[in-house]
Image (cartoon, rainbow, N blue to C red; front, side, top):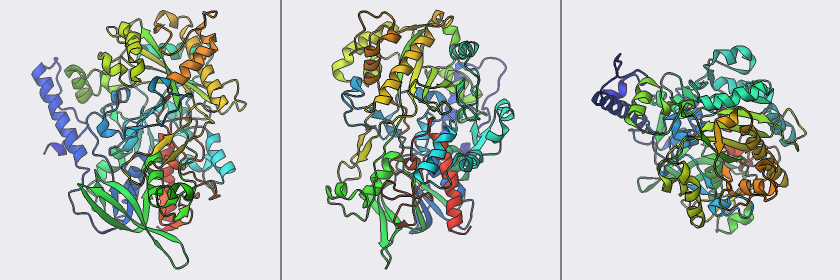
Length: 621
């Protein structure tokens, strides 16, 4: 059977270049092989009435929970996932660059952020979230970035999250990590592991242009660092969650669910949308989670949990489900006629990272090795040899401090360098923009369509102070919630964004870099240059307009079910149990007390690993 073929083994090995027919057959076989493997995640057994644990969501945290819990053969686990299986497309690292298809994306957007952010999109900033087995780990940049030790010490010291200091959580980062870069492990052995489940990989054959930026900045005194080691100030390639055997994306679902799907105590039901958490009250008034209600194949069903309901639906869906189930701000729930079972600040404290891209034409195409074109040759190289443009999405990062940041060992700014080729379809390029601006964006992109090779200098503010809120739109679970991120409403955030964009512009003007890249024609639509200031990096009004126009999420929404000791300003306690309930935990990015100063996927892995110990401890296993 094709599904039993070793998934990482080459299908064809040939010394001479294969014919087109051979390539086509080989690619077709791999597509079929991987599709069958992914589709095996869907249970073919009847759903029982009761399980020990019900996991809502198979994203980064949910997949780890299910995989770890079912290591105990006496615990039955059901995973309910709203999306379908992973695909050959989501396997491919280059997919991270491309417009996310609707079938694996919830398609959320913010309410209008005007006049503060997202002007190019009429203020409605897209919020990609993964609706697929593996969740948003299928959509992200594959980056393995833990954040700063002070992030976690602040969780513990300021918010009463006992047990979550950096020293205490580091072992849980290490539990998942299988770092394949021997140099990084040897340099900082106390900060890395080679025994975990998730492969952490330094990109092979990164684009020459981003290497040129890295080496130039190192020559000018920027330290070469391991950002997951003792210091964050400096530069290097991002490590990423990629299987080194075949250069495919390594989601936690690929690691913890798919290889273990034959366990008799594990079932994954896809296309199952959970609409309500079910409760009983004890005689002394304690609210006990007993199961969930879900929709699947046009039917509404209930399933019950003898031990716990574990909510891992993410920072958008987890708070929405809690509120629909009667846990949330009383006044807000009453607006929709929902009974308030527990009055908690669900949906507050919405935090996110934003980026603003600077577009540069790459003048020497020989400095580009990655790409986005799904040609037969590229697919063959990727699927058969784990090489070629589709197998790559390398990035160089640089952490540094803004002038406003007084905590110099806790950087707040980051610039990334990556190759992001233009689509050859002009209409697809301008589709994200507001209709009123599309003609101008067509004019902006048209001169670069034939050359296509583009360097993105991505400018990030990674310790934002702006805070938003998520609320219900209605009592209908299929109505997307109202997402108000309040991007750039704090003066610290906009000042920091202006500074990081200016720094990005200045770096690209350095010698010899300016000989290899050229900034796209300015101004961007909707902004005006300073008539008396030829240096773009010093034109403050333009930089502010640029930041407020092209505001883009990094996809790091967290905090909407904040962890803490005090139930007046938090939703879950340090054991991740929802305040005032029994047998209900939230285990995903929504529990962050504050956002970390790095990509959020690795901390979510850590949260799931720590949750496993908490669950085992509470159930005396």
